[in-house]
Length: 168
Image 1 (tube, rainbow, N blue to C red):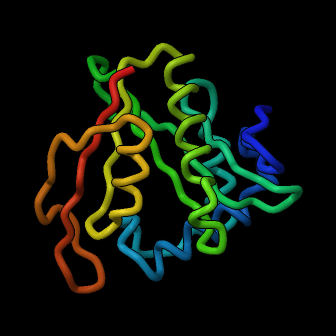
Image 2 (image 1 turned 180 degrees about the vertical axis):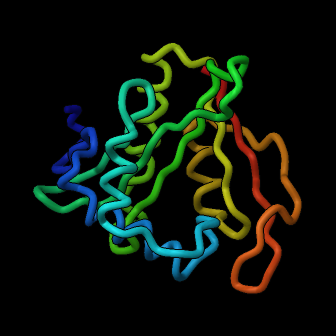
Image 3 (image 1 turned 180 degrees about the horizontal axis):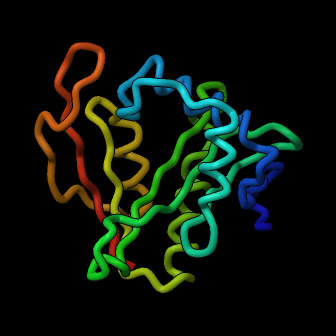
């Protein structure tokens, strides 16, 4: 475990965090374009997701006491072997805890983990309209490298995806 500052602890996600992670994620599924999923995840599906996040591709949480304030993960960028040194990050913060530095602490920790595991670069893909996530990534050393136009459709509208990258 790594102490991320006053009271906030960043640690690996456990199966016991599944319900809290699903609640944070599902709020985005049902009310925002931050994720392209359109069906909420069950707690059991979230447990499977956590179980799949091992080794160089972890899921982490930010907590105060027993409360999960946010979570993040590293994932394979693509399945083909030549992409093996590239990883993609994801960061989600509970709506009640935004603006407190939770996202920054999670993303800084994910970048450190990616570096520790020998990855060469981290990619972030941020859905249209999520300027806060773009600013967070830029504050953590990422640069916008492209915009994928109208690659998703949710809530009756086409969505762009901003692609950011940080070299390690």
